[in-house]
Length: 132
Image (tube, rainbow, N blue to C red; front, side, top):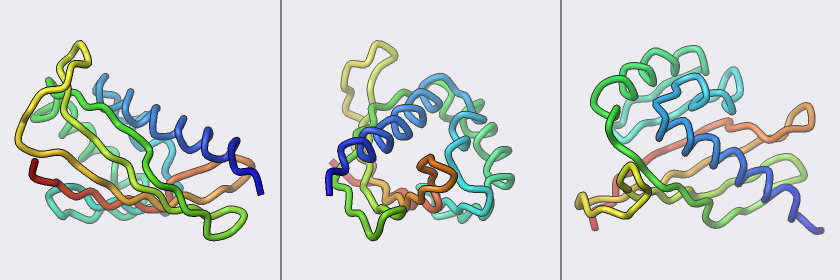
């Protein structure tokens, strides 16, 4: 089965999330989550439900992450069925101009995607810092 269009759709989701991080847009950051989605951030906090993600996203992007930028890349994608996929997202710190910077760590995240109503959404995400 050709999954080219599905992979392109997943890449667009990740691109939106990168844009949201780099522009401090908390609403866009969580826009692709299902209503009952869950996220574990790099500090290990579990956020259950898209509604519970908004205020912590605003606080992080408006506070300690306000002047930080990242480049995101969709990694391996495994389709577990017609409408379910798992994938890794890799992230690196960059300057405001998009140039890579060494901050001593990178990030890898595991995403669970589901397709509903014709669009791919994030059902779950787990972030992990990786020492470089």
